[in-house]
Image 1 (spheres, rainbow, N blue to C red):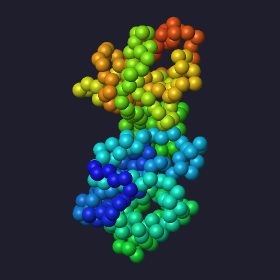
Image 2: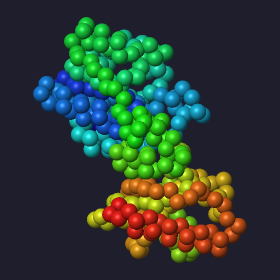
Image 3: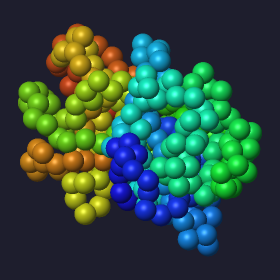
Image 4: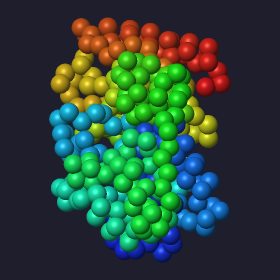
Length: 311
């Protein structure tokens, strides 16, 4: 997949296109991408996705923006895995926020992206003050010569699939439900960085991934599987949060203890699937109390895997 930062020039080939934030690339998004590929082939069109960075809600109201389900890198990896040929990442800033909907269509969709087939969600809105909608796109398609379609909501686990529904499941600790809506386990990925080695002194060496400015939609202690370390995924237990016992008020950190594994993996990029929530994060009186709880957490995670093998 080719990744384009913006749309600097008209595309080489006409495009079958979809537009959206695609946070999480959940089952609804996957259905759109699949429909796009099916349409593009017989028409001889390239497949393309237009997405935004940052999320528009982060631009308009950063303090109230919802937690992201995927980083930009993770989202791009998922779009590539879905078979998209091009992804156009548009920097969402004031100029784009103020762009009239008709200009977005004529200049970007038609002239630069050479759109011939367009698919959007049934609730898609765009342009300054969100004045553009599906009916406007369909009318523009008649004028400019592209077909426009909308995809109805996808249902799973008895509810409408959406990024908001996935977040709600994660916040409430319903990882299995979140996985049903995503079509895969919720995951986080990153590079393993050196820590203070406290976990090793307590008998639980961990692979540490800094969360940075991203505030995840979940926290606590989890049974996880980890890819990127061995030929097959490894089982483990993970802590995601601010470590109130050892670092009150500290930054968010993902700490993963891999069962029956003791190799140096500093610098390795790993993929962590969150499979089951064991408990909420808690503060303990001292390190001895923390270690006893870690023993219980590891036993609970091993018990989970014993009951759910193969995971």
